[in-house]
Image (cartoon, rainbow, N blue to C red; front, side, top):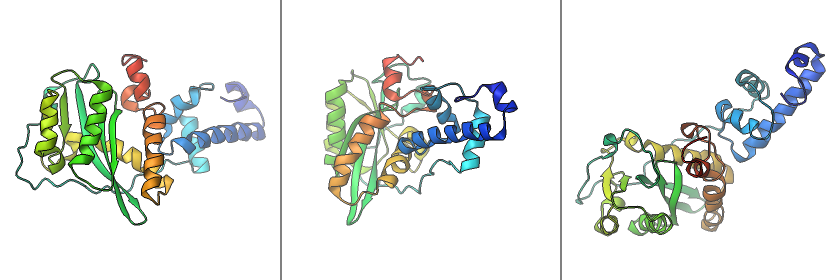
Amino acid sequence: MTGLSRSAYYKDPVGKRQKADVELKDRIDAIHVEFPGYGYRRLKPALEADGPAVNWKRIRRVMRQYGLFPILPRAFRPTTDSRHGFARYENLLPELEDIKTPNTVWGSDITYIRIVNGFVFLAVILDLYSRRVVGWSISRRIDARLVLGALEQAVRERRPPPGCIHHSDQGVQYACGDYVDVLLEHKFRPSMSRKGNPYDNAALESFMKTLKYEEVYLGDYETYEDVVERLPKFIEAVYNKKRLHSSLGYMSPEDFERNGGRK
């Protein structure tokens, strides 16, 4: 409790309690500047990373008192077309009970970013062990070159072993011959979600929502150049290095990999 002991908090005049709450509000505000989607669960370890312990109930009370609610995502529209004649692959994720090491399973997806005169598209590859973005690509067009850019970056930087599962939806970008040829060349095991079932790729859905309401909607991008300049900074400097994940024991993807999955 910042600047006030637990016993003093309940015995001192209201003015001191209010001051302590204002200090906590200011600290929450500072975290929300960078991570506006953080609720009280993520705020607790973030606050305690550079300050004293604070309990859940007090965080929730101060958030309600000052209206410090996380920003909720807008509706998400699908961006891939599964109406094609290319081969479709079995969903291999159910055979995995637990992912224990990096470069065991990668997940991939595409989303759009609205700008003044249209859309810009982003393809992303996550390592599902750590939720780390290992490859990304930005383009004005939603085609095979977009997703190949993300895949080639991920392969170049991570050098996955043979047998790494590559999971995606059934969109034509991921099923086309050019993309599958690269997967097989690097000895990936292709895997695809069931048609129309977003829960098979839940980690990517979660990432895209985080990206939208913690960066894109706040960034108010107007041009393609805005996206190219600012979105990579969020992915690399904020999401991979700093953003805390409840599924990772409230560590960032980079810290989770560095610590071997242990806090």
